[in-house]
Image (tube, rainbow, N blue to C red):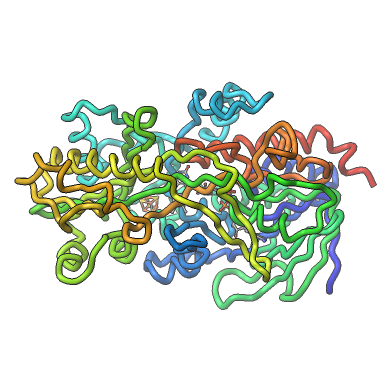
Length: 500
Ligand SMILES: Cc1cc2nc3c(=O)[nH]c(=O)nc-3n(C[C@H](O)[C@H](O)[C@H](O)COP(=O)(O)OP(=O)(O)OC[C@H]3O[C@@H](n4cnc5c(N)ncnc54)[C@H](O)[C@@H]3O)c2cc1C
Ligand code: SF4
């Protein structure tokens, strides 16, 4: 096994890891050695082909279809230089103060997160897309919500030179989306941080990590040769995401008792709902996500967003098969889509564990409350689709595969709660949160409010796993704000933490 030595090692390069790397990078000029170890590859520009299956397999864990233990849901999260920010859509919302107050973590204030969010909105070039760049799929949602009297807002997004190719979730082929692979990591590298790709951290030892470097046949070569490494570090920051951070800590020999490790996992269980128009609409051209509706966030615990997915994902999300199924997927150019995000509660029993080989296992159960929210959302979305002029709507819990516009008065009869069965209806998630939640003490949390693991002064967590409960909005800006706090704590304690 080869030996390396750094002062600070950051595991993972996504929204959390990329932010910590950039925020700590100024220490490099004082001689502090910082490395980011990233499991995924750094693709070459020409390798962002926009081909759905190829990109899904290269950029996502399990091709984007990671299953929970009871196989009732799929989870999408990426493995790449830039983590899930390579495949996210780039909608950039600031957390609502009500949510932070609901979290109720002593010492963690909404005003602090909002202020830090402002900084990241600026550095990621977040702005509203110009009206002439908004396509039919988005405009129809907006106009229908207005017609029905629902609140609807435009998403701020983080693009530079967006060409509306609609492939954000396959990795932007036009280098427009401002993920950490475009902003934070290049800035950190320019300041002296070493980023090692294709490097999986297997476990954390006392002031060290053990990692394996591989050499896949695509992407830039890793900075290190293939093989096994033991890397000494005075400080380790775990930013491997809400599935892999708890899993990594669980398979490490930590000198602390952490009964909350892996627990309180939340994920905004999601439905992708589809309707068909009798005419072509612009949907796959243009930025996919321009509007959201939070009319029902408080009352019915779901949020609605525009979306447009690719043929394979769309096909997987329709309940049914055969000719009816084909009637939708062969006419993608007529489809309108809405993404539903249920706001799920943080429950101790929803957790990340590991199997015998140390791989993560998601134990997540859909509660009746979440299923009720998803059911209500199907009826609301059907109303929105019909108000937008759709000819027919596919409700996955419908008595029929397609509900015709002429039947829109009978939605309560045609969309049936009993039909919303996990396993029959495709439920997915891309907002993975918790598992190393921050809080007051080790019984109910894993880190303090600055991301330091309870009882282990040299070990920090900085990613979505820190969330005490669901973000209730798209989370990446809040992840950056939490990571910003972690970096600040390490900087202010650098003299102690980095002592020889
Ligand atoms: C398709 C999709 C669309 C999304 N759209 C939006 C959006 O529009 N707006 C929004 O706010 N959020 C969005 N999100 C969510 C957002 O991208 C994530 O919440 C965020 O990136 C999570 O940040 P993170 O640092 O926790 O983890 P990640 O960004 O996932 O980064 C974790 C990194 O750690 C690496 N890693 C894991 N284990 C190890 C290990 N053992 N050794 C070394 N490296 C490891 C992984 O390879 C990965 O690169 C989206 C997510 C997806 C999947
Ligand atoms: S829509 Fe814009 S940000 Fe998304 S992939 Fe296309 S160019 Fe990139």
